[in-house]
Image 1: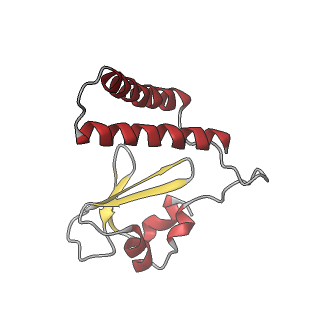
Image 2 (image 1 turned 90 degrees about the vertical axis):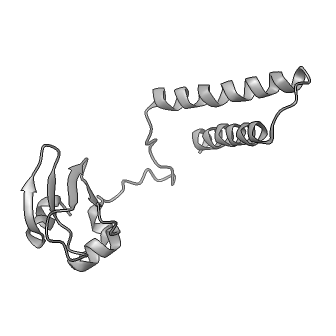
Length: 136
């Protein structure tokens, strides 16, 4: 479903630089509090009063799943990477820095705090998650 198909169901629709603003149909709205835009065939909406997408779409009789284009299947059940490789490598570098600092402190016999240990474990988990995602 395109944004153009949703706009007729809304009140006080105004064009903005990045999309549209309108009154949210999910709550009594006297002035526009919901923003909408469409990117790569996906309709994005946000109600600043806190209404969820299910409430918004339900109030105009549309299934929220219709906001997203159908997925293309590669036959392997694997989805295309949704992240820029540079960003992923930058994030991994940050996590590896944390692992390196923590490991060095432990090797030197420095006492490490519970917070540092917890952050180390988060870093290890994130690196492992990235490894699994790359291997499918």
